[in-house]
Length: 241
Image (tube, rainbow, N blue to C red):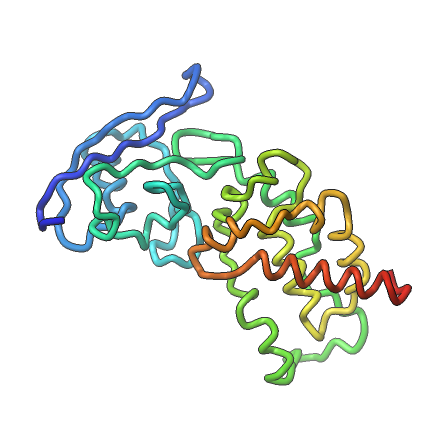
């Protein structure tokens, strides 16, 4: 795409308090240099249509607030350069499987309700040190990847089971559960495994890898779910669960 070329942002608009159904609205804007999709949305918001609803925060691919469906894939708008999409039309939708509050803003409440169910915090009732809770480099290495989830919800929106089973915990919550199961300092492994060994837990995952493809941080929730399944089976066979 040439510098200063023009693209069309085709954005799904919907205000449940006013509209009967979602509909796309087109906006044209000039693309100069390394303009990101988020910066393009700012341009529309500030100079063309101040009614556009969108969510963002850090602008540095750290917070996950601007996750949305952009030209056929879930991406972070702040790190997606328009030129790299190589398209004259940029189609943008909100995250799927979550209620739309307005336009590109969805209600993350159901996502975080499921996240709370897996107890996303360290539980260590005994021998808590006064200062640092030290791990060996070998034990810490188990967490290197799974600790980096930014809770953007892209994996949740890409998962077919979160659409068909509203109670399914979903890939983000299950990966977080695995993050603590793999943590040598956590002391409630069996309780965590009992939570995910549920009809709405790990066994709902059909291992189709949508979540891995969608993750903007290149994490692998499918692998975490497989690790949890393995842990559950081992604990069941040995009578610990």
